[in-house]
Amino acid sequence: MRIWPIILIYFFFISCATYWKNRKNDLLDVVTVGAETPMYGAAVKIGPIPVGLLFLGGESEMGKKDLGRGYGVRGGSLGGYHSQQLVYTFLGGESFHSGDPIKDEKGNWMVDEKKIPLTENDRYNIKSFKMRYFVFFNDPVKDRKKRKKQTFQRELTQDLVRQTGKTEFLVYLPSEDKKPFGYPPGYLWNVEVVGGAYGGLRFGFNFGEAVDFLLGITTLDLYDDDVEGKVKPSFPGFPFPAASDTEKEANED
Image (cartoon, rainbow, N blue to C red; front, side):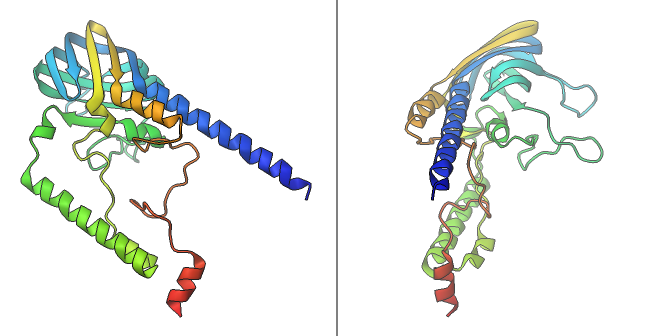
C-alpha cells in the first residue's frame, strides 16, 4: 500500500507540468513580435481585413512558394517560421506555419486539404493557416451546403452511437473541418502592424487568444488547442466517450 502515495505524487507533478506547458503556449498565442524577410511595404490588419501595400515572401522557382522567413513569437511558437503575405489596398492573402514541414519522397512539402503544410507538431498545425482576405464574406453556396450536410451526418452518427453503444457507426463520422475558411478561429481577433524594406517587423495582439489564456487558468480551453497531455481520439471528430465494455457486452447479448 505504500506505493500508492508515490504514484499519486508522480501523477500530481505530471499534471502540474502539463498544466503549465499549456498556459505557456496560450500566453505565446497572445502576442506577435517577429522579424521577417523579404518584405516590402507596410500594412495594418484587423482580423481578416487589411489596409496597405505589402509584399512578403516569393518563390525560389516557378510555382514553389517557399520564400518568406521570420523569427520571433508568432502563432504560439518561439523561433523560426514561414510567412508569406500580399496586401493590395484591402485585397490579397497570406499564409503562415511554424516548424519544418513534413516532406514526401520527392522532397516536396506534405499539405492538408487546404494546401497548408503539415508538421510533426500538432499545435503548430492548429495555428497554421493559408487564406485569401474577405473569403469569410465570399462563402459559396456549395461550400455552405457541404458543411451543413457534414454537420447533419456528424450529429446523426453521434446520436446512433449514444443510443446503441455500437462504435461501428463511427466509420460514417465525417472529420470536422477546424479551418473552413483556411484559418483557425482565433485569427479573427488578431490585430497586426507590419512593414519594412527587404527586411521588416511584425507586431500584433490577439484579443481572442488573450481571453483563451485567461479562461485557460481555470482549465477551460476556448480554442481546443491545449494539446499537452491530451489523448488523441481513435476517430476524427470523436467528441464523446466511447461505450464501456459492459455496455458493449449488453448490446451484443
